[in-house]
Length: 422
Image (cartoon, rainbow, N blue to C red; front, side, top):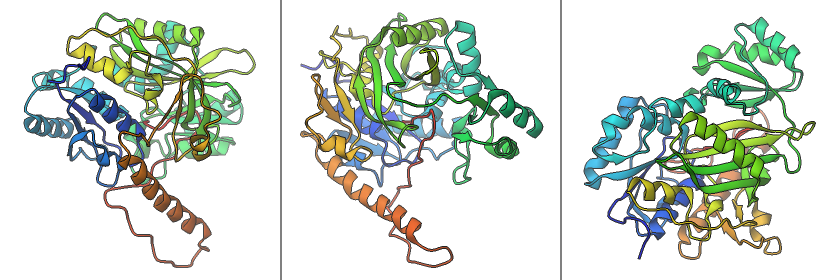
């Protein structure tokens, strides 16, 4: 008998167009294996996710950059098709923020955590996060907000080079404009040029001190804060391998208990009154050994399945259990458990010698749900071959474009101190 209330379906919501978002598949499998009817509201036409045996239905999503009204219209349409109240699970920052704002309007059709409407936006906004960390004494890289091109150059001088540039609200960046949510700058001139694009970006530019990557420096904490304010499920993970290397999302991660990181996470969420699923990124400062919060994602991280405990509880199942009024089982952490994203870490995926004592989970392949894994490799091969053709084609020459993948777009490569929505 399932621990979860299988009478209550789940609706997974995402607006970004990355066909390789393995966190969506993780949520589909986690709930589907427990007998929950899972609906996916995302651009899945060219994604391996739709091949999962655990997807009950797929629905057209709001477009990237959709307004709150557009998202509300889509969710109302999906609610009419589902036919009964469902647990809503946003899987990117834009939809998490919209769900918080629309909570009252969605109340008759969807179950959502009870927290202040603007809180998800507050923690996802990188400028506001710096203020939050200062208020609750959680270490955060020194951050400056220039008010002019000259101010950007001065900030570069004060922070030192290289430095990290971030747009405070990356979900507002226009698609195809060439702006990245986070990047490393090596000159003051680069800071001035980037500031000049502030109007195009839709939010303010932050300049932040650069914390170098290194062995055992990148950590993350996933958790679920229940209606009583207690952090349940999840745990502390160590990023062993990133994609791109040293700067991006978790390609190989290990469940590694770390009381100091956990204490910082619980102090922060407790002070905010946060409720629901969250994903925090930390980097250890090499000179002091202190752990600095880099990002607060108000939704499941793509590698959340790393933290499936001895009772089978993860943060997505915890959300469903809590919102449907069911008790959360008390499982034990599975220290040493690993999570591997095959397309970003193929050699780690093929190796069985490095599997930790807690076992290993692959992002795409699963013995009980093989189709998404095979579909991913076919899609990934086409993606990589297309990139290679672009790099090998001499400037000015013309070659036939690769055949497009229906409904898919190339994933955005995350940069320094940032995970894909992951």
